[in-house]
Amino acid sequence: MTATDPALDRLYEDFADAGLLPLWTQREDLMPLTPQPAAKAHVWRWTQLYPIAERAGELVPVGRGGERRAIALANPGLPGLPHATPTLWAAIQYLGPREVAPAHRHSQGAFRFVVEGEGVWTVVDGDPVAMRRGDLLLTPSWAFHEHHNPTDKPMAWLDGLDIPLVSSLDAGFFEFGPDAVADTSTPDKSRGERLWAHPGLRPLAGIDDEVAVSPLPAYRWQHTDSALAAQLELAAAGHAGAVAPGHAGIRFTNPATGRDALTSLRTEMHRLTADTATPVTRTVGSSVWQVFSGEGEVRFGQRTVEIATGDLVAVPSWEELSFRAYTDLDLFTFSDAPVYEALRLHRSQIS
Ligand code: GTQ
Ligand code: FE2
Image (cartoon, rainbow, N blue to C red):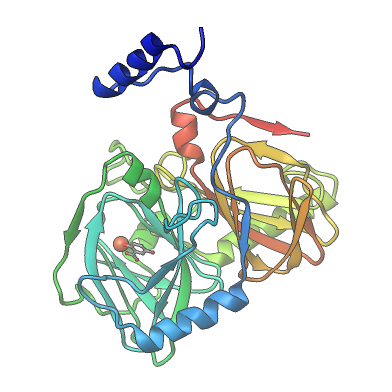
């Protein structure tokens, strides 16, 4: 029997006419031995991103329709798509002096992380939240949000969303909000923080409510920094609590449940002391890392790339990954881990 067998040819034609395809010709692609991501490990430089965002600020208005001056990291392995990885959106968003990004809401979940600058308030379901260096700000799925910059300086930050995931799940819904800014006040502390940013203390109002997404809209740098510093101090004194010697790490969690702050995205901050290297790890699911401060290198398999403040790194599923710190190195990261864990598809390997 050969491929030119006319009966066999007819069978394949009939498959196509009937809207059918056999497994046996594509088994290796459909069911690989290990994940075979199309996305590539890639690094974007902050020194290139920021000036490009500034130019967009001069040339492109922000307003209703386009909604945001957000410039997405496009993975070179996913040509034509504004996807950092198959599940994750990562963008630099730029808001000039006195500009407003109008209110809307969507089923995609989002956060903002600030590497430099301050002065924008993001109003989340009517609660104005200040954005400052080192802060993580949440915009959970379906919460109305708008951003306004009442200062005379521009500000840029990192947006992380699950846009590609929601797109591949055909679960995207979107609604425009009112055109006028809901609340132009600029409080130092959001209402959410005033209620929830007290360690171990939960307000009695709604204590029995299920709180699926974090009621805390902001995770402030002061808290993140002191949590990381404490781990390293304890480790230096011979106590447990750090990830490894010279490696501190925290996860941003929902204070009501202890679970991930957002339902589809995991967010963490890692601190490596100078000369510390992490073990080579592979994880199912993809991630994006941003250097918050310091210098070091990231290694994908045999390829090593130097990284510095603001640089962004996309890591596909099952890629060999490790970091080495040249100076003290703070790394923010987000991933799709909660999704893989919910589906029990998570796996990792440390070599
Ligand atoms: O700030 O609301 O980068 O809706 C992509 C989509 C930011 C936002 C993005 C969004 C936003
Ligand atoms: Fe949005």
